[in-house]
Length: 99
Image 1: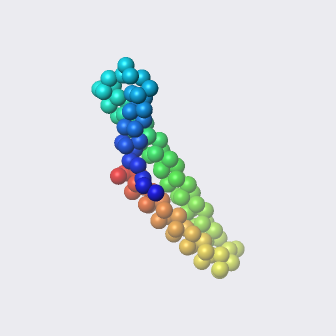
Image 2: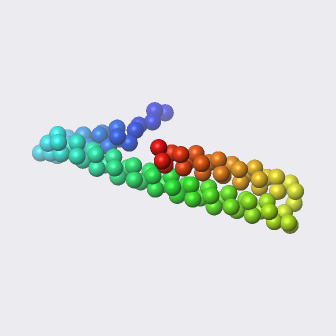
Image 3: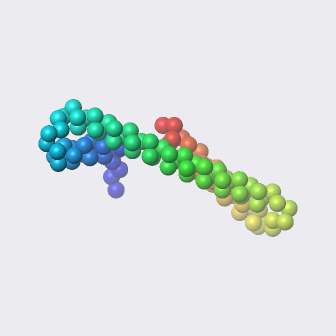
């Protein structure tokens, strides 16, 4: 599946609005596209940050499970793997937030 950029989605939406409202000039459509792109980028960034937070929450949960003395050895190993996986996912998402 081809991934569309946020700028491309915003431009397509602005063109659709321009077709629906012919009185809107090209400069207005450009401004609209910019505003739509900004809104999309903000929404995507917030969602990625929420995902980072969830990964960090799960990493902490698994670290606590691993550290608990009552945790069986087999679950301790699983907890370590899952905690590491959550940390890797959080790092990957965090990198996308700052890109």
